[in-house]
Amino acid sequence: MKYRLTKFANTIDGQPMFKVLAKVQEMQKEGKDIIHFEIGDPDFETPKNITDAGVKALREGKTHYAPSTGIKELRESVRATTARSRKFLPDLNQVLIVPGANIGIYYAVRCLVEPGDEVIVPDPGFPTYYSVLKACGVTAVRVPLKEENAFRMNPDDVRAAITPKTRMIIINSPQNPTGSVMTKEEVVEIAKIAKDHDVYLYSDEIYSRMYFAEGVYFSSPSFLDHCKERTIIANGFSKAFAMTGWRIGALVGPADVIAKMDLLLQTTSSCVPPFIQYAAIEAISGDQSAVNAMADEYKMRMQVLVDGLNSIPGIRCLPPSGAIYVFPSIRDTGMTSEEFTDFALEEAGVAVLPGTNFGNYGEGYIRMCVVSSREDIQKGIDRLRAALTER
Image 1 (cartoon, rainbow, N blue to C red):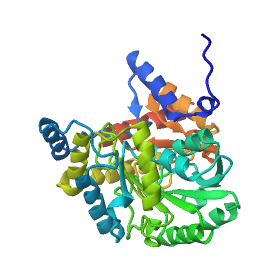
Image 2 (cartoon, rainbow, N blue to C red):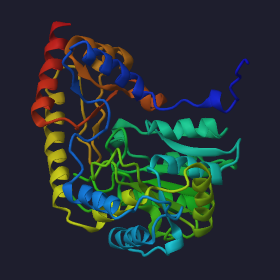
Image 3 (cartoon, rainbow, N blue to C red):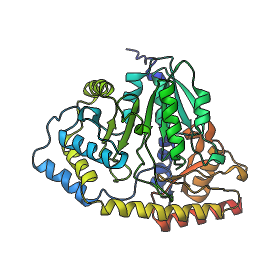
Protein backbone atom coordinates (compact mmCIF):
# COMPACT_ATOMS: atom_id res chain seq x y z
CA MET A 1 0.00 0.00 0.00
CA LYS A 2 1.24 3.45 -0.86
CA TYR A 3 0.92 5.74 2.11
CA ARG A 4 -0.28 9.25 1.51
CA LEU A 5 0.13 11.95 4.08
CA THR A 6 -2.71 14.34 4.77
CA LYS A 7 -2.55 18.03 4.01
CA PHE A 8 -2.48 18.58 7.77
CA ALA A 9 0.59 16.34 8.16
CA ASN A 10 2.40 18.24 5.42
CA THR A 11 1.86 21.57 7.19
CA ILE A 12 3.56 20.55 10.44
CA ASP A 13 6.95 22.23 10.91
CA GLY A 14 7.84 21.20 14.46
CA GLN A 15 10.67 22.96 16.30
CA PRO A 16 13.72 23.66 14.09
CA MET A 17 16.16 23.78 17.02
CA PHE A 18 16.13 19.98 17.19
CA LYS A 19 18.01 19.93 13.88
CA VAL A 20 20.95 21.64 15.58
CA LEU A 21 20.62 19.34 18.60
CA ALA A 22 20.83 16.24 16.39
CA LYS A 23 24.02 17.56 14.77
CA VAL A 24 25.53 18.36 18.18
CA GLN A 25 24.74 14.88 19.48
CA GLU A 26 26.38 13.26 16.44
CA MET A 27 29.52 15.36 16.95
CA GLN A 28 29.63 14.35 20.62
CA LYS A 29 29.39 10.69 19.66
CA GLU A 30 32.49 11.27 17.54
CA GLY A 31 34.31 12.61 20.60
CA LYS A 32 33.95 16.35 19.96
CA ASP A 33 33.88 18.52 23.09
CA ILE A 34 30.86 20.85 22.81
CA ILE A 35 29.82 23.74 25.06
CA HIS A 36 26.02 23.83 25.12
CA PHE A 37 24.05 27.03 24.63
CA GLU A 38 21.44 25.64 22.22
CA ILE A 39 18.52 23.93 23.99
CA GLY A 40 16.72 25.46 26.97
CA ASP A 41 16.91 22.40 29.21
CA PRO A 42 18.12 23.34 32.71
CA ASP A 43 21.31 21.60 33.80
CA PHE A 44 19.96 21.39 37.34
CA GLU A 45 18.20 18.30 38.63
CA THR A 46 14.60 18.64 39.77
CA PRO A 47 14.74 19.77 43.44
CA LYS A 48 14.69 16.82 45.84
CA ASN A 49 11.50 17.84 47.66
CA ILE A 50 9.63 17.84 44.34
CA THR A 51 11.04 14.48 43.24
CA ASP A 52 10.30 13.00 46.67
CA ALA A 53 6.67 14.11 46.38
CA GLY A 54 6.38 12.36 43.01
CA VAL A 55 8.01 9.17 44.35
CA LYS A 56 5.75 9.22 47.40
CA ALA A 57 2.70 9.47 45.15
CA LEU A 58 3.96 6.54 43.08
CA ARG A 59 4.43 4.41 46.18
CA GLU A 60 0.95 5.34 47.37
CA GLY A 61 -0.53 3.99 44.13
CA LYS A 62 -1.28 7.33 42.45
CA THR A 63 -0.80 5.63 39.08
CA HIS A 64 -4.33 5.37 37.73
CA TYR A 65 -6.48 7.74 35.68
CA ALA A 66 -6.91 11.22 37.11
CA PRO A 67 -9.67 13.71 36.27
CA SER A 68 -8.92 15.15 32.83
CA THR A 69 -9.04 18.69 34.21
CA GLY A 70 -6.44 17.79 36.83
CA ILE A 71 -6.69 16.66 40.42
CA LYS A 72 -8.51 19.13 42.61
CA GLU A 73 -5.56 19.57 44.99
CA LEU A 74 -3.31 20.84 42.20
CA ARG A 75 -5.96 23.05 40.68
CA GLU A 76 -6.51 24.59 44.12
CA SER A 77 -2.76 25.17 44.41
CA VAL A 78 -2.78 26.88 41.00
CA ARG A 79 -5.67 29.07 42.17
CA ALA A 80 -3.79 30.06 45.33
CA THR A 81 -0.59 30.76 43.38
CA THR A 82 -2.52 32.89 40.89
CA ALA A 83 -4.07 34.87 43.74
CA ARG A 84 -0.64 35.59 45.22
CA SER A 85 1.11 36.48 41.99
CA ARG A 86 -1.64 38.04 39.86
CA LYS A 87 -3.95 39.40 42.55
CA PHE A 88 -7.13 37.54 41.59
CA LEU A 89 -8.56 34.16 42.56
CA PRO A 90 -9.81 32.21 39.53
CA ASP A 91 -12.72 29.83 39.91
CA LEU A 92 -11.88 26.14 39.99
CA ASN A 93 -13.50 25.62 36.58
CA GLN A 94 -11.12 28.19 35.09
CA VAL A 95 -8.09 25.97 35.72
CA LEU A 96 -6.89 23.13 33.46
CA ILE A 97 -3.82 20.96 34.09
CA VAL A 98 -2.16 20.05 30.80
CA PRO A 99 0.67 17.70 29.69
CA GLY A 100 3.21 20.50 29.30
CA ALA A 101 2.51 24.17 28.64
CA ASN A 102 3.54 23.72 25.00
CA ILE A 103 0.33 21.92 24.05
CA GLY A 104 -1.79 24.71 25.52
CA ILE A 105 -0.99 26.76 22.41
CA TYR A 106 -2.55 24.08 20.21
CA TYR A 107 -5.59 23.73 22.48
CA ALA A 108 -6.22 27.48 22.42
CA VAL A 109 -5.86 27.89 18.67
CA ARG A 110 -7.85 24.77 17.85
CA CYS A 111 -10.73 25.78 20.12
CA LEU A 112 -10.85 29.51 19.39
CA VAL A 113 -9.53 30.26 15.90
CA GLU A 114 -11.05 29.22 12.58
CA PRO A 115 -8.96 28.37 9.50
CA GLY A 116 -8.40 31.59 7.57
CA ASP A 117 -8.51 33.76 10.69
CA GLU A 118 -5.49 35.69 11.95
CA VAL A 119 -3.45 35.53 15.15
CA ILE A 120 -0.95 38.23 16.08
CA VAL A 121 2.36 36.76 17.25
CA PRO A 122 5.76 38.13 18.29
CA ASP A 123 8.64 37.67 15.86
CA PRO A 124 11.18 36.49 16.89
CA GLY A 125 9.14 34.14 19.03
CA PHE A 126 8.65 30.57 20.20
CA PRO A 127 8.54 28.35 17.06
CA THR A 128 5.50 26.40 18.28
CA TYR A 129 3.36 29.49 17.75
CA TYR A 130 4.11 29.51 14.03
CA SER A 131 3.95 25.73 13.64
CA VAL A 132 0.56 25.41 15.33
CA LEU A 133 -0.96 28.29 13.38
CA LYS A 134 0.28 26.92 10.07
CA ALA A 135 -1.00 23.41 10.82
CA CYS A 136 -4.40 24.80 11.79
CA GLY A 137 -4.71 26.89 8.62
CA VAL A 138 -4.46 30.14 10.56
CA THR A 139 -2.51 33.18 9.36
CA ALA A 140 0.30 34.31 11.66
CA VAL A 141 0.50 38.09 11.64
CA ARG A 142 4.04 38.73 12.84
CA VAL A 143 4.80 41.79 14.95
CA PRO A 144 8.57 42.46 14.88
CA LEU A 145 10.37 42.72 18.21
CA LYS A 146 12.95 45.41 17.60
CA GLU A 147 16.32 45.65 19.28
CA GLU A 148 15.87 49.40 19.68
CA ASN A 149 12.86 48.65 21.90
CA ALA A 150 14.85 46.02 23.85
CA PHE A 151 12.91 43.35 21.91
CA ARG A 152 9.66 44.22 23.69
CA MET A 153 6.35 43.93 21.86
CA ASN A 154 5.16 47.44 20.98
CA PRO A 155 1.42 48.04 21.51
CA ASP A 156 1.38 50.47 18.57
CA ASP A 157 2.61 47.68 16.30
CA VAL A 158 -0.03 45.34 17.69
CA ARG A 159 -2.76 47.89 17.11
CA ALA A 160 -1.61 48.44 13.54
CA ALA A 161 -1.71 44.67 12.90
CA ILE A 162 -5.37 44.27 13.93
CA THR A 163 -7.78 43.47 11.08
CA PRO A 164 -11.37 42.20 10.94
CA LYS A 165 -9.91 38.68 10.73
CA THR A 166 -7.92 38.96 13.97
CA ARG A 167 -9.06 36.37 16.49
CA MET A 168 -6.23 36.25 19.02
CA ILE A 169 -3.10 38.03 20.23
CA ILE A 170 -0.23 36.00 21.69
CA ILE A 171 2.21 37.67 24.05
CA ASN A 172 5.19 36.15 25.88
CA SER A 173 6.92 37.92 28.76
CA PRO A 174 9.62 37.12 29.83
CA GLN A 175 10.22 36.17 26.25
CA ASN A 176 11.76 33.30 24.35
CA PRO A 177 14.17 33.82 22.56
CA THR A 178 15.16 37.36 23.56
CA GLY A 179 14.71 37.45 27.33
CA SER A 180 12.77 40.70 27.01
CA VAL A 181 10.17 41.68 29.62
CA MET A 182 7.31 43.98 28.71
CA THR A 183 6.64 47.01 30.87
CA LYS A 184 3.45 47.32 32.87
CA GLU A 185 2.28 50.07 30.53
CA GLU A 186 2.81 47.85 27.47
CA VAL A 187 0.97 44.90 29.01
CA VAL A 188 -1.93 47.11 30.09
CA GLU A 189 -2.19 48.68 26.64
CA ILE A 190 -2.25 45.33 24.83
CA ALA A 191 -4.92 44.07 27.22
CA LYS A 192 -7.00 47.13 26.33
CA ILE A 193 -6.43 46.53 22.61
CA ALA A 194 -7.73 42.97 22.98
CA LYS A 195 -10.81 44.22 24.81
CA ASP A 196 -11.48 47.06 22.36
CA HIS A 197 -11.33 44.68 19.39
CA ASP A 198 -13.03 41.76 21.16
CA VAL A 199 -10.25 39.25 20.54
CA TYR A 200 -8.70 36.60 22.77
CA LEU A 201 -5.37 37.25 24.48
CA TYR A 202 -3.05 34.29 25.07
CA SER A 203 -0.41 35.23 27.63
CA ASP A 204 2.49 32.78 27.65
CA GLU A 205 3.97 33.24 31.12
CA ILE A 206 6.16 30.14 31.31
CA TYR A 207 9.14 32.23 32.47
CA SER A 208 7.25 34.41 34.94
CA ARG A 209 9.32 33.16 37.89
CA MET A 210 12.54 34.06 36.08
CA TYR A 211 12.79 37.85 36.30
CA PHE A 212 16.22 39.40 36.80
CA ALA A 213 15.85 43.14 36.25
CA GLU A 214 15.38 45.88 38.80
CA GLY A 215 11.91 47.07 39.78
CA VAL A 216 8.55 45.36 40.10
CA TYR A 217 7.66 42.70 37.55
CA PHE A 218 4.18 42.97 36.01
CA SER A 219 3.57 39.86 33.98
CA SER A 220 -0.04 39.32 33.22
CA PRO A 221 -2.75 41.13 31.24
CA SER A 222 -5.33 39.19 33.26
CA PHE A 223 -5.83 42.19 35.56
CA LEU A 224 -8.57 43.45 33.25
CA ASP A 225 -10.88 40.42 33.11
CA HIS A 226 -9.43 37.95 35.64
CA CYS A 227 -9.38 35.41 32.80
CA LYS A 228 -13.18 35.30 32.72
CA GLU A 229 -13.75 36.82 29.26
CA ARG A 230 -10.80 36.75 26.85
CA THR A 231 -7.47 36.25 28.63
CA ILE A 232 -5.77 32.85 28.86
CA ILE A 233 -2.69 32.45 31.05
CA ALA A 234 -0.33 29.62 30.17
CA ASN A 235 2.24 28.55 32.72
CA GLY A 236 4.33 25.50 33.43
CA PHE A 237 6.91 23.78 35.57
CA SER A 238 9.68 22.95 33.09
CA LYS A 239 12.07 25.86 33.44
CA ALA A 240 11.74 27.46 36.87
CA PHE A 241 11.51 24.07 38.63
CA ALA A 242 13.89 22.12 36.31
CA MET A 243 11.04 19.75 35.41
CA THR A 244 11.34 19.62 31.62
CA GLY A 245 10.91 15.85 31.51
CA TRP A 246 7.88 15.77 33.79
CA ARG A 247 5.68 17.42 31.13
CA ILE A 248 3.12 19.38 33.11
CA GLY A 249 1.61 22.84 32.75
CA ALA A 250 -1.45 24.80 33.74
CA LEU A 251 -3.90 27.04 31.90
CA VAL A 252 -6.20 29.62 33.45
CA GLY A 253 -8.94 31.03 31.23
CA PRO A 254 -12.65 31.61 30.68
CA ALA A 255 -14.63 28.67 32.03
CA ASP A 256 -16.37 27.92 28.73
CA VAL A 257 -13.05 27.89 26.87
CA ILE A 258 -11.38 25.72 29.52
CA ALA A 259 -14.28 23.25 29.23
CA LYS A 260 -13.68 22.83 25.49
CA MET A 261 -9.92 22.56 25.98
CA ASP A 262 -10.61 19.86 28.55
CA LEU A 263 -12.58 17.88 25.96
CA LEU A 264 -9.65 18.17 23.55
CA LEU A 265 -7.27 17.02 26.28
CA GLN A 266 -9.54 14.05 27.00
CA THR A 267 -9.49 13.18 23.32
CA THR A 268 -5.72 13.39 22.86
CA SER A 269 -4.14 12.64 26.25
CA SER A 270 -6.84 11.45 28.71
CA CYS A 271 -5.11 13.10 31.67
CA VAL A 272 -1.81 14.12 33.21
CA PRO A 273 -0.45 11.24 35.35
CA PRO A 274 -1.51 11.88 38.95
CA PHE A 275 1.91 11.23 40.52
CA ILE A 276 3.30 14.05 38.35
CA GLN A 277 0.53 16.32 39.58
CA TYR A 278 1.43 15.64 43.22
CA ALA A 279 5.03 16.58 42.43
CA ALA A 280 3.71 19.80 40.88
CA ILE A 281 1.81 20.63 44.06
CA GLU A 282 5.06 20.43 45.99
CA ALA A 283 6.77 22.55 43.34
CA ILE A 284 4.48 25.55 43.77
CA SER A 285 3.40 25.06 47.39
CA GLY A 286 6.46 23.55 49.08
CA ASP A 287 9.93 24.74 50.03
CA GLN A 288 11.21 27.23 47.43
CA SER A 289 14.83 27.45 48.55
CA ALA A 290 16.21 25.24 45.76
CA VAL A 291 14.07 27.03 43.17
CA ASN A 292 15.27 30.42 44.37
CA ALA A 293 18.88 29.23 44.35
CA MET A 294 18.52 28.17 40.70
CA ALA A 295 17.07 31.57 39.79
CA ASP A 296 19.96 33.33 41.53
CA GLU A 297 22.48 31.19 39.67
CA TYR A 298 20.80 31.92 36.32
CA LYS A 299 21.09 35.64 37.03
CA MET A 300 24.82 35.34 37.73
CA ARG A 301 25.35 33.19 34.64
CA MET A 302 23.49 35.74 32.56
CA GLN A 303 25.88 38.47 33.67
CA VAL A 304 28.91 36.34 32.76
CA LEU A 305 27.46 35.56 29.34
CA VAL A 306 26.39 39.11 28.48
CA ASP A 307 29.68 40.66 29.62
CA GLY A 308 31.63 38.01 27.75
CA LEU A 309 29.71 38.40 24.49
CA ASN A 310 30.06 42.18 24.58
CA SER A 311 33.84 41.77 24.92
CA ILE A 312 34.03 39.94 21.55
CA PRO A 313 34.51 42.18 18.49
CA GLY A 314 31.59 41.81 16.08
CA ILE A 315 29.05 40.69 18.74
CA ARG A 316 26.60 42.95 20.56
CA CYS A 317 24.29 41.68 23.32
CA LEU A 318 21.55 43.47 25.23
CA PRO A 319 21.18 42.31 28.84
CA PRO A 320 17.90 40.36 29.09
CA SER A 321 15.41 41.08 31.87
CA GLY A 322 14.20 37.50 32.33
CA ALA A 323 13.96 33.91 31.10
CA ILE A 324 17.15 31.93 30.41
CA TYR A 325 18.14 33.33 27.02
CA VAL A 326 20.20 36.04 25.37
CA PHE A 327 19.73 37.15 21.76
CA PRO A 328 22.98 38.76 20.64
CA SER A 329 23.50 40.46 17.28
CA ILE A 330 26.20 38.90 15.12
CA ARG A 331 25.64 41.21 12.13
CA ASP A 332 29.06 42.82 12.43
CA THR A 333 30.80 39.46 11.98
CA GLY A 334 29.70 39.48 8.34
CA MET A 335 27.95 36.13 8.74
CA THR A 336 24.29 35.22 8.55
CA SER A 337 22.66 33.57 11.54
CA GLU A 338 22.94 30.11 9.95
CA GLU A 339 26.56 30.71 8.92
CA PHE A 340 27.53 31.86 12.41
CA THR A 341 25.81 28.85 13.98
CA ASP A 342 27.77 26.46 11.75
CA PHE A 343 31.00 28.40 12.32
CA ALA A 344 30.59 28.41 16.12
CA LEU A 345 29.93 24.67 16.20
CA GLU A 346 32.59 23.57 13.73
CA GLU A 347 35.37 26.00 14.61
CA ALA A 348 34.79 26.68 18.30
CA GLY A 349 32.85 23.67 19.57
CA VAL A 350 30.11 26.02 20.76
CA ALA A 351 26.47 25.11 20.10
CA VAL A 352 24.08 28.04 19.57
CA LEU A 353 20.87 28.47 17.60
CA PRO A 354 20.34 30.77 14.60
CA GLY A 355 17.91 33.60 15.19
CA THR A 356 16.06 32.47 12.07
CA ASN A 357 14.84 29.43 14.04
CA PHE A 358 12.60 31.91 15.83
CA GLY A 359 11.05 33.84 12.98
CA ASN A 360 11.56 36.06 9.97
CA TYR A 361 13.02 38.89 12.03
CA GLY A 362 15.68 36.72 13.68
CA GLU A 363 18.25 37.13 10.90
CA GLY A 364 21.45 38.68 12.19
CA TYR A 365 20.99 37.22 15.69
CA ILE A 366 21.64 33.99 17.55
CA ARG A 367 20.03 32.55 20.68
CA MET A 368 22.07 31.30 23.60
CA CYS A 369 20.85 29.69 26.84
CA VAL A 370 22.39 29.90 30.31
CA VAL A 371 21.97 26.21 31.04
CA SER A 372 25.67 25.50 31.52
CA SER A 373 27.92 26.31 34.47
CA ARG A 374 29.62 29.69 34.74
CA GLU A 375 32.92 27.95 34.03
CA ASP A 376 31.57 26.42 30.82
CA ILE A 377 30.00 29.73 29.80
CA GLN A 378 33.35 31.45 30.16
CA LYS A 379 35.02 28.62 28.25
CA GLY A 380 32.48 29.06 25.44
CA ILE A 381 33.13 32.80 25.33
CA ASP A 382 36.88 32.23 25.14
CA ARG A 383 36.44 29.71 22.32
CA LEU A 384 34.23 32.07 20.30
CA ARG A 385 36.66 34.96 20.75
CA ALA A 386 39.59 32.82 19.66
CA ALA A 387 37.77 31.39 16.64
CA LEU A 388 36.62 34.83 15.44
CA THR A 389 40.11 36.27 15.92
CA GLU A 390 41.61 33.52 13.76
CA ARG A 391 38.91 33.81 11.09
